[in-house]
Image (cartoon, rainbow, N blue to C red; front, side, top):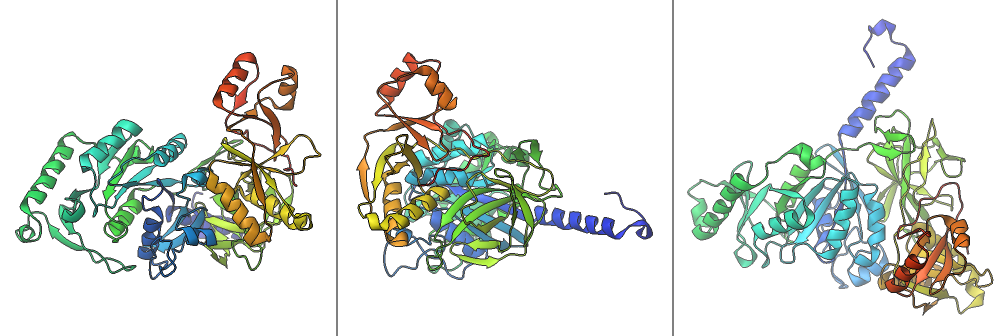
Length: 555
């Protein structure tokens, strides 16, 4: 808005100008990111240490399945605490150096990769965590491809440098050759394993000496210039000389640090450290905030939506039941995309066309929450969900828009979910419907209406175990799983009419998903290939199409 003499500015114009300034300031001082990694690379440990340095917690916990070990903040579900793994996504917001950071914590276990895919839809940046000994691992590669599809900037943290690992140059070469992603090492390690002595900060020319922080506490950085004679008394000459030679090689033949390339997802800054010992976490966080992009425009039905748009918009990327078992609550996680969200505002629900008053929005910090008065692009808010929200739903004020939906991916394990106790059917139905809503597992249904048992469709076996565990502990229902013997699912792109045009088909089972779309189940990929050859006109997809204006089936 162009400035006018103060006497010419009306009250409405002043309010609009104040709103724009507040929104601009909020957008400029927000960062949002998710961490991607293979299981056991140290993702939850790094998350805890970032919270520690952000002042969000006073003591960090390690991820151990032991009764006496302090439990990590981001793992709130009882099964997570028992097994020492992360199996749900959560949101952790904290303030660091005047920047509001929204950390989207994701499951590390590959059986819950679909939950991670959904969370990445709400992220503006990603941190790729690697184990220094193992390098790139399968789950990391899969999640990287999702980031690439969305052009998400990626920052790499190579973890566990205090343990024996691969050569740092080999780790960089693996990223560049396998992921086709240029690298720039922001710091460089001196030794590794028992001989790990610290890192050289390439921009300042300082050596940050390695020290193990007291368990759960922040580490104290000891810095010394690389040309300081005292350094030779602290670090073995051969280790330091090797590190300096490798830096010279990087200076001569490596990539340059280019902010535009980082934000385009073409170059990744690389950091070396040890999350367990807190070493390298604070320098990483400081550099990340300088290089990461703020909230960006999101694609919607009428084109990209700028965060500075003066009306509120957002989308649901996750649903979670029973985060607080005492209240049997259901929470919808909404990524704010534009404008300012305010408590008690009335928004439109794009899928149903209904108006909804949002009276108790919550700021989520793992299992803890607090009522929020307002939120801005990049933030995530929790809304009470009495069954009205579905993953991918768009909420907005003003002109109608609808954001791109979040697809479902093809499951690989299929089981009938049986309820042996008819008297518990009410709880069974409630539990299945609520777990379906949140995407804990995909639910399919037989097209024969007389068969009321739902079909659980999962990416991994652990998903099924979690569903049974939660039904028993959260809904007091014991269940039985009967495997179906299928391994491949494909959605029929043209819907039921396309399937009817083909006529009778063999070596597969026809079921429907929660949105009444036809799904074909195959015993193996050979059967799928045979059907595609026999009926080339039938178009099948491994990814479910996005739905709009349809209510899901309930049990």
